[in-house]
Image (cartoon, rainbow, N blue to C red; front, side):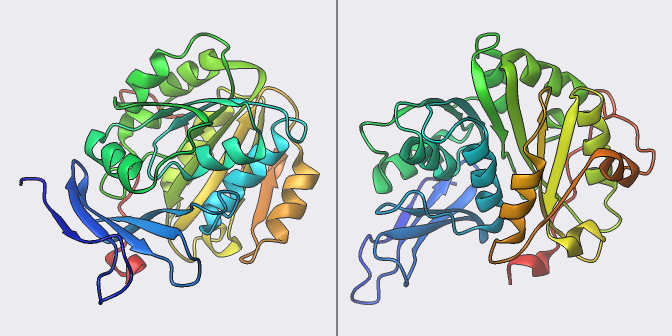
Length: 290
């Protein structure tokens, strides 16, 4: 399919947003009617990112707010971070880091070069932000990060609504740990539904590589009542569990934080995932976005 474009930038005259074929499908940028310069990025109808160009600290999506809590607590307020983002979308979290922690240095790894071009053109980054974007596979881009460079590594990679298998293994996490500075933090967006086999396996995998873990999710997701997102946080240093718990509980859609023995018990004896056994995360139900 050739690259095409429809729609326009304005909101007048019945024209709504921008649509363009990218490597991952049909990308649409839809204006937010409640915020003057805010946009939602959808790929094949599935919401991927929300960006407010006037206020990059505004995080609309539930899981992005939870990533925001991790960013806020990863270092003292305002201190610059070295961050690696695996999966770019509309660069929402990179924009948030740049706004809340000026002088941060960031690398975004987004395989879909056509999507990167679309976002750069329609939702330009702040020229003062120190954000470098690489259009390569997430694991390939991670391999190029110097040893011990990053204070934060964020994984938010989906293809066709699924996390690719090669980003779910102990070998992948070995490279995350290599890239992290001592005491650095890893955060991952995990999506699963009943019976939560993928989520349990991912916690077991992280527990095999990191000393400290926490999981932030909607209680209904943790109970296996519905498909949804969970944010895994991992480090070799103690995590700010009390503050994460307080912030998650105060979100518009309150989240629960599991950690320690409760989180290990949640795995139900699941084994760590290796490259040889890895599979992509389950596809979301078609009804999720309708």
